Length: 297
Image (cartoon, rainbow, N blue to C red; front, side, top):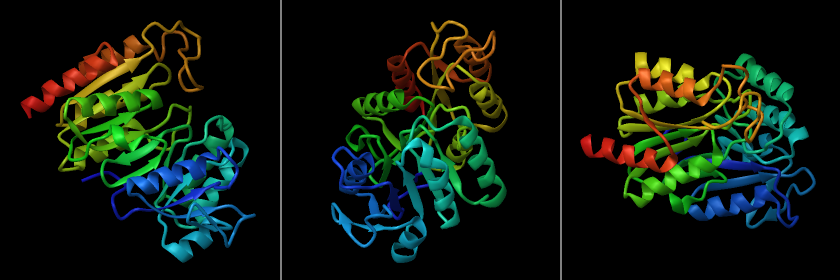
């Protein structure tokens, strides 16, 4: 199985245009070619037309009414993300995937809490994330489909976009398939957490082991360690990026910053190790450890 998306998922891409280099259009086309049911795009100025054969609507509500879309993928510029997210939520989307980076933290906090309060059945993934892929079934976001392998048994959850791709590719190189791969993003207010993904993988019968990729900053990995220790029976392999990052230095994005003794890579590794997680020193070793886990399943 897969978590949250499958071959029946119907996706609307917000922010499509005919402008050269438009990411929404480019990835909508790529993911449609992968086999994802990309049923609509939105652009108020292009409503009633088609872009790359995809029908364009003025808003997500109109797209849903015409196509039964149930997932929205947001590529609009950062200042417009809050409006795009709420538009998708009000249209009744089950899942909203926000690829856009640079969204103001106060905007993130505001729309995240509005979703919790007013649209509790809508899941938010991101902002500043690569999206999620259910190999062989559905790809939403910017992950290259050809580096994944369907059939399980490994589920991946990652804060780092680039390391998400490396994890997929290295497992594929070893002939190890994936049930799902979720990039949760590394912003200060992520819509979906490690724990959300771990709980979903624990419940998924086809996921037999989980790879977790974290990084410095915040306490998400420590919280994940507590969940793993108390709630998970499936083996977990983890890699934490940023071992050499100095305190107070931002690494990559706003969520990856060490404040004093909090949020360090070593502290996160210690917490995960105490929960029974196998800890890798680098991304390649993470795939090697997972190969050992899979052999022992």
